[in-house]
Picture 1 (tube, rainbow, N blue to C red):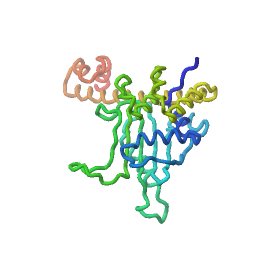
Picture 2 (cartoon, one colour):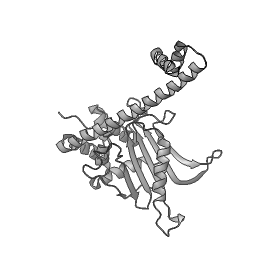
Picture 3 (tube, one colour):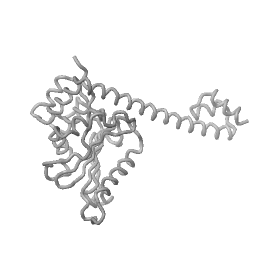
Picture 4 (cartoon, rainbow, N blue to C red):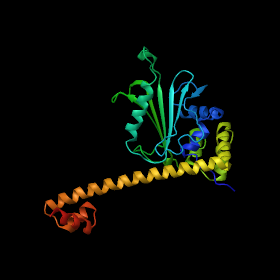
Length: 280
């Protein structure tokens, strides 16, 4: 019995959705995701950065996103993020703006710009509400009037999706449960029932899980992601210590005791004592 690979790992995600032979899988996922904002289903799509074996697997900083263009020229970028790199909203706007502006070639007019859509699938909580799916546009604060539909950003937060409370009549829920990596056989079968594109995605995942080369690349990518997560955690800890040290020094300067400065700053008494000794 083999262990099924995690479809959330970007390498696996792109192998399922970002290859020409699975374009129907990508189309199905996009049409479900964009059902509230797109009046007509997308009938065809061009993958602008198709998956290439070993592409980015060794690069700890790479993001194996999917950049595609619909038949009517709209741009779509799908990115899956396993952990919070912070400033995600600024990062999202930055990459959205690069895609939007990048459409124009010399001599073209603004009229030729097409709608650009970003879809962020997150393995952590980010939006401060209980909704697992949030859709953002550019609107006027008081009336809700939309300025333009050219900016469209989707956030899907997998941890907020509770299997026991999820409505399996909602096709988007089925897709997100697949991406979340449900390991209950009965639920797995229900998700795929009467859903050809989902079944194809599952079959692709099963094939990758049994393929020796795919598993080797998967393990390499997992290691790169773990290394990056460790660096981020280390940077966060360094920032916390720097802030705590700054607070402790200010408290000592105000004449507080080592114990008082320790309790307020969060540093140990011995750490505060060393700061005091160096200060004097």
